[in-house]
Amino acid sequence: MPLMTAEEYLDSLRKLNLKVYMFGRRVSNPVDDLIIRPSALAVAKTYELAHDPEHEDLMTVRSHLTGEKINRFTHIHQNREDLLKKSKMGRLLGRETGCCFQRCVGMDALNALSIITYDIDLKYATKYNQRLLNYLRYVQINDLTVDGAMTDPKGDRSLPPHKQPDPDAFLHVVEKRKEGIVVRGAKAHQTGAVNSHEILVMPTQAMGPDDADWAVSFALPSDAEGITYVMGRQSCDTRKLEPGKRDQGNIMFGGHEALVIFEDVFVPWERLFMYREYDFAGRLVELFAAYHRQSYACKVGVGDVLIGAAQASAEYIGVEKASHIKDKIVEMNHLNETLYCGCIACASEGHQEPSGTYCVDILLANVHKHNVTRFPYEISRLAQDIAGGLMVTMPAEADFSSGEVGHLLKKYFKAKDGIPMENRLRILRLIENLTLGTAAVGYLTESMHGAGSPQAQRIMIGRRINMREKIRAAKKLAGVE
Amino acid sequence: MWNKIALKYCGGCNPQYNRREATNELKEKLGNRVEWVTVDSGEAEAVIVVQGCPRACADLSELPDVPMFMLTSVEQIQTVVADLIQAYNQPGDDQE
Image 1 (cartoon, helix red, strand yellow):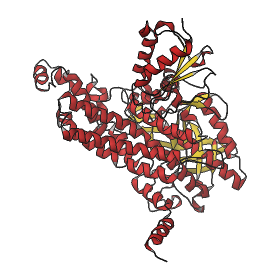
Image 2 (spheres, each protein chain N blue to C red; image 1 turned 180 degrees about the vertical axis):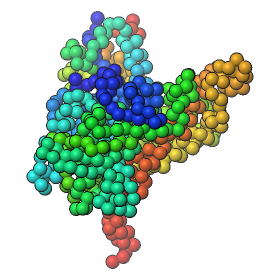
Image 3 (cartoon, rainbow over the protein chains, first blue to last red; image 1 turned 90 degrees about the horizontal axis):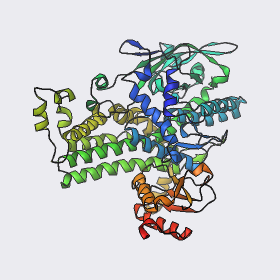
Image 4 (cartoon, helix red, strand yellow; image 1 turned 90 degrees about the vertical axis):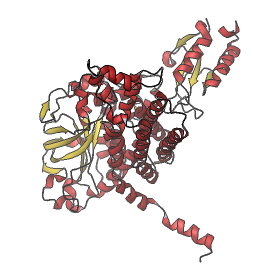
C-alpha cells in the first residue's frame, strides 16, 4: 500500500482510537465530526492528488530506501530538485485547499532527524540513524501522516527546562526501563494532530547538560496509551454546525491545532531517535525550523486563492477596471510572488549534509519565513479593502431564505446584471474566512508564529549573515585601509 | 487509428495556462484517430508532455523511450498537432 487513496486515508483514521476532547466533551469519531472533518479532508487532498496524473509529478517520488513510488510527504530530500518540488507542492496544495493541509510538519521532522541522527551516531557511536530509517520505511510503505511535534508549553520562558517550577513544562523522561523509557509533558499548537497516524516528538530548544532528561526525540502511534488531544478553538468555528454552507466561506477544507498531552507514555527503544544527547538539541531545532520555514510556501497558494477572490469580488460589482483596484491587485500579486521567490531560493541554494539528505539554505529559509510573518497581513488588508464592508455586515445565509426578509436581502445585495447574487456573497464569505474566520488561523496567525515567531527568524538571520565580508567590501570601495 | 499516445503532466504548481482545457483542445484537434493510453501502460508510442510553464520541470526520467512532444503554452497546441501529423504523416481533423 505505498499510496493510499483519500478514502483509504479517512478510513484509516477511523480505525485509530484517539482520545480527543473539544468543547469539554470527548469526541468519539473525530473524522466525521462536523468541526474537525474539513481538516481531515484537507489532509486527504494530499492523498488524492498523488493519484491525479495532473499533479503526481509533484506529489510522488521514488523512495531512496525501497525504490517504490511514495507520497512526497514521506520522502527524504535527495537533491535540490526534491527541495524545489517540495516548495512547489506546498503552493499547489495551498491553492487547492485554501488552508493548512497539515502534512508538511511530519516531512520536515523526518528530514531534520535524518540529518541529526547521523551526526549523533558519528559522535557517540549510537544507532539512531538506522532506527530512523527503519521507521521511515514503515511510514513510506504505509503512506502515513506524521505529526512533527516540537513546541513545548515552556512555562517560565526565562528558565531552562531543569529549572522550571513544573518540570512537565517541557516534555521529559520520567523513567528508564529495560524495554524503553516513560515520558511526560505536552506539545502545544499541534497542527493536524488528530488527523495523524503517528506523532514524532522533538525537543523544543537548545539545551545544556542539566537538561539531558528533556533532550528526547521519539515516534509513537497517535493513539498510544496515555496521549490526550484537546482541540483548539478557531474564530467562527461553530458555523460548521449550522445548516447551509455559504457562511463557512471555504465550504470544503480547513485546518486544526490541538494540545497533545503525554501522561506517562511508554516509548520503546526502537522508536527513540535522541536520548539525553542535549548537545544536539539546538542543531535539531535549527534544522527542523529551516525545513519548516521553507514549508510556508503553502501560504503562497493560499494567497493565490485570496487574490482570486478579491479580483472576483471586484468583477461582480463592476469595479475591476478602476485604477486603484487594479493597482491593489498588482500589489497583492507582487507580495505573493515575493514570498514564492523566498521558498524557491532556499531550495535552489540547498546543500547535501553528511547523512546524504539535502537541506535548504538556512539563511534564505529564515528570510522567506520572516516575509511570511508580514506579507499575508498586507495581502489580507488589501483583500478587505477591495471586498468592502459587506464582507462583515452580510446577514446570515438563513436570513436570505426567510419568508419575511429574504426577498428584500436579494433585492439590496444584488450584484451587477448577469452575476448571481449567490456568487458575490460566497466569494465575500471566502475572503472573510481567510482574513478573520477559521482559515485566518492558518493564513495569518500561523504565518506569524508557526515554525517560530518573527524574532526567531531575526536571530537566525543575524547569526547567518557574513558581516565581515560586507564590511570588507565597503572598506575597499571607500579606500579604508 | 493513429498511434497510441500518452499524456504526461508536470506537477502544476503554478501553471500559466489551464492545462486541462489545453489538453481537451489538443484531443479535439487530434480527433478520434488517437488512442489515448497512460504513460505506464507500456503501449505508448509517443508522449505529449504538458508543462505548465516554460520552466518545463516535469520529471521525464521514467518515460518510455518514445518520441516526446512538449506543450508549454496554449499557443503551442497547433504546433504540437502539426508536429504529430508530420511525425506520423497523418492528416488531422482540421486538415481534412
